[in-house]
Picture 1: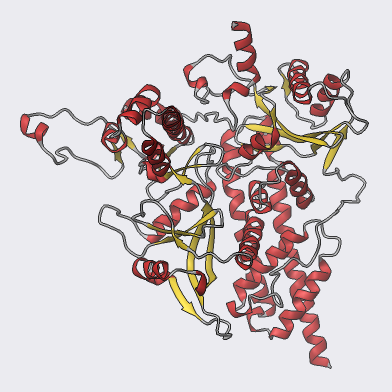
Picture 2: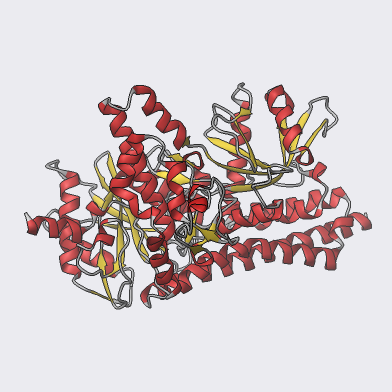
Length: 621
């Protein structure tokens, strides 16, 4: 009995050390998130960007710390599997009354899989399924804030209630004119409600934490009236100059002056909120005591958004990764179609495949590339990490990175297996891992991201209709204008896409154009934008080869034209709206402003929804 008792003591100590590691992680995560309010109040935009980037690294650092501690103090990798089984049971006991049990389970998985052989990645040793419910978790401490606050206005008191609601967030900055802004919001809410009778349960519910990202803070909540619920968000910004500048019309404004705040717009409904919380945007910073309660509230507002993506949007990407994989396994069990090579033009660096019934694509880095792609596997992974840590401004798709992913072999077409074996053999293993006769395809490294319609395919569909057809012209126009807007938003975020071909962009379900091919991206500030030199003689002018010197970071925007504008209908729209993208001076101007420390505004909503734009237009009329 003594050895068994000793094992139990060790098991509890390991579980407790693991829980200490998680609690330290979440305390640091929450502290950094709560500091976002001070950075917003002081207009410390560079500090906000830096904090958003560095917070992403917190999780892996704490996992590493916990793993090192377990090896040093308990020789965790040498413990018997009976001990590890007990470790999990003790850990479950420690989750009782914990405020972040689902995150703590994921942390346990991360540490355990770092220590144990992958043959133990099963529910006896890690949390393949959640063990503790996240329903109705409450912080009972007297000083703790509830997850959301409820307000009960009448039509007559709506304005007064909205002023109180905003003041309850305790922002230290003065508003330019909060009474005016509350009036705008009250009018917008009254317009959404229409003439319906306000029921006995009419209320406004808002999450207790402000959502911070880039230069904005967002109040997020919902209107409840009878059986109806209307999701809304109120962006709060440092007050802007009067609209009317050309840059403003494109969603890029000058540097804001710190000090005075304004509610910039009122966003309503699931579609507006889905764009705000999009997978193509940087993660929010919000101080959450009970994250599952925030997710539950947000899911009630955006039922079409998977819980995994909501956790991602809140900066809890590892939890999002866990939930995504559970959703994926669930989908596999309830579907029968096969993985296939993804439709579209094949990439030179990435091998892409998908499952038609599942709205994501899987990307594997190839083992070798054509001569024009002067890169390495590590450089490509570095580019993907750059995008993960950067402000994606709604124009760059987020990716989930996985290692040693197992798929059922019988769900892969032979053509796809042959493709992987040809282009990425180092990443492929086919084996009967569990010894049960069920063959598996194991991919050593894979990126997973939302599936979109490739922009070249979207345009081709319009060409096939006939470019003179009204529907085709409208589709081409929307796509080309959005394509240029996407590039300009990335420019504002200091990103040069590198390969700007249509095939590297996709259309989302909301009609937004998003970039998803990252192997050639660079910071704008690292590039050298040049005009093509004037030919010195007829021989140079007639030469089919590049006769002038080209450095490794040199970019010649006017050379984009032959690759992008071969179709007359596309060219007409592009030259009308985005001809400046072909001018080196455009890129040089933005580069200079970024180098001078300027941070652009890129809004996650249409300019027409901004109160300043709406009311200036009304005055003009």
